[in-house]
Structure formats: C-alpha cells, structure tokens
Length: 188
Image 1 (tube, rainbow, N blue to C red):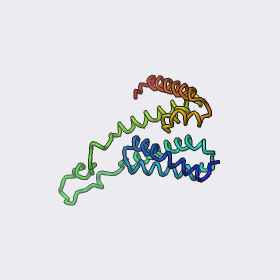
Image 2: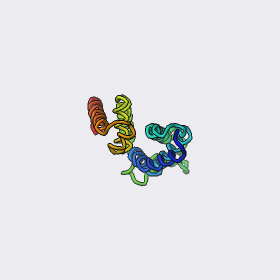
Image 3: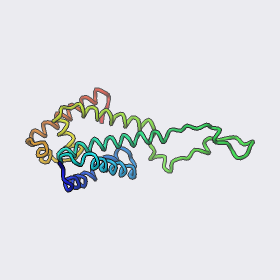
C-alpha cells in the first residue's frame, strides 16, 4: 500500500507530463489543468490504498478516461437544439438573420472542426485499443517508456527486469503498434 508520502511524490512527479499529455489532446490550458486535477483527485480518492508500483498505470487509465469524458461533455455542450422561432427580431416586420445571432469564436484559427476533433478522438481510441492488445510486459514497458517518459534504467527497475529486456519489449511493442495502426490506415 502506498503511503501518503509515496502518493504525494508520485503526483508531483507525474504532474508536468500529465499536463503536457492533456494539453496535446484538448488544446486548452484551463481544460487540461482541470483534467489533470480531476485525475489526481480520483487516483487519491479511489486508489490511494493501492501499492505504489500500481499507481502509474492506474493514473494513466484515469487520465485517459477523464480526457474522454471532457470530449463527451464538449460534444454535448456544442449540440444546438433550438427552434428558430426563439430568435425573433424585435421589429415585427424585420427579417430574421440567423448569422447575426451566432457568436463567433475570438480566434477561429484555434477552433478545431468537429471532423478534426472526431478524427483525433478516433485515432486516440484506436491507439489505446492497440496498446491494450499488446502482451502485458510489452504494454507495461511501452507505457512506462513513452507515456510516463521513464528512462530505460527506471523502467527496468520498476518492471524487475534487465535494461536489455526493456529495450526488447519496447522495440516489439513499437513494431506491433506501427504494424497494427498501418493496417487500419493510421500513420503518425
């Protein structure tokens, strides 16, 4: 079981990487901060009693789920269900112009189209599925090295194996992922 200090140290160490990952996905600093904070709170509330070695993978799963939840909430908020009769003009004889009532974003270049958002979410989902399909040791090595940004020696110590084994597991995982994603037409 992780002690309070181990949990606190883990959260301090993972905070920056989690923020970078979140901002990459949602492209909004405030939303990324909220996602990371929610993820940390959920880890501490629900899994704080788990062994310290399990915290990295649990946190990554929680962070992924919080990110997906954010995208779902955004989709719901963007849905527009209203009657055009709700947008009547003040003058009785005037013509209604819907475009006058639509609020445009401050910077249209930063707004991602729904198609791009959906495509990115689908690719992220496919990547997650392919990572989940990897053999356990390959998945563990891959996530520690590339998601957690741990170096080879840290990963080897966490996995209880040699550095050579970590390199082999990572190489096989990357090869398997690139082959599986290429078969689905996804190139990164």
